Length: 323
Image (cartoon, rainbow, N blue to C red; front, side, top):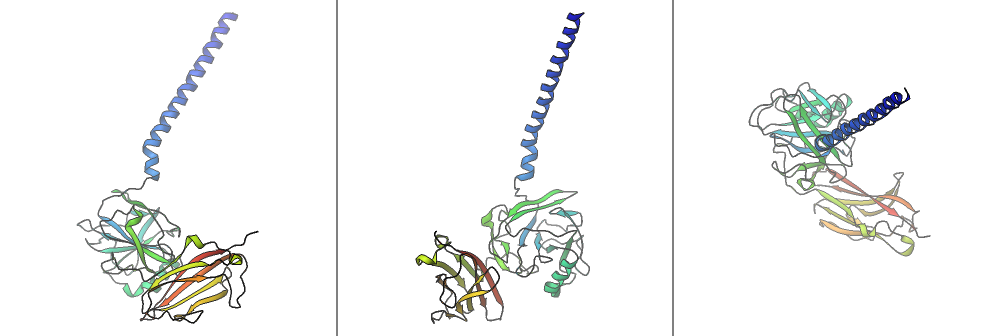
């Protein structure tokens, strides 16, 4: 009897171990298959050639992200398309009243996908002059929530599967990003350039290689800097030579601590009128000539062009001190 019980017990242990090993083997096989097929699906970008091109992204608006985040696309499929069944960054789409029919977007037409509710009101306030049946606007079922530091754009259809899937990258704070050409690979960072503040959702032609209106960069070798040992931060800017330029420093509360350029005249009295690029240095001192406290400060560059249009850029600098 004892031998029989022992044999039974041994059989149960061996069967359990074999079953456990078999289950583990199944799990391992599943994990391998998942890593080979599902993981690339989740994380790899795809340069999908469907004839639908994303050509401009406004994800970091110069006024407010709510309602001003949008995607501009162009239909290059060779036929009319219906986008009512699309999902964009997980959101479904619906028709914006008074705009072109999103169920019949003709070949070659550009169309815009924006945000709902108050977002639509904000969008209409800025771009309402374009509202007609020849311009196409779809409204997402929720905010697009496009990160200002870059993120993922996914567009799919229940009938045709993936349409676009790629990462976007910030090029300039408060500016849209524009694809450099229709045929450029959207998965490459080099395929995108700086657009304009607020973007151009209904600009005919869409893709453009026009130069940026203004640029502002901080020399990384001088930031952070320590004014207590006579260090300065180098500030590089570019703009149209005809634009009136202002450059000033604010603290984290928004208070202006010093103005390096005021209406084309520098702090030391030199004129920048007619100059399209320059390097300025801030020594970490305020209006009174006192070294500012250690902390984070923002360089603000502002230009006013001949059409009275104001453009602004901001960059962060850090004032430090050795202890």
